[in-house]
Amino acid sequence: MCVALPGIVEEINEDTAVVSFSGNKVNALTGLIPVKVGDRVLVHAGCIMQVISQTEAEEIEMLFNELSEAAG
Image: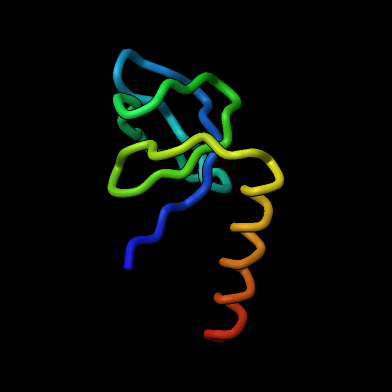
């Protein structure tokens, strides 16, 4: 099973972007789809896979929080 996490694009540098995940910043490759600063995106294995809406991002984050709470 693969899990892609939602984040926010904060900066774009040629073929990478700085993506923030609740304050944790990582570099992710942008070559698969066009992105811009402020986009909510799904990142998997260091690659931006999809641009998503704010609503979709909030739903995914809520599900991850519920899973975390259930796992204790």
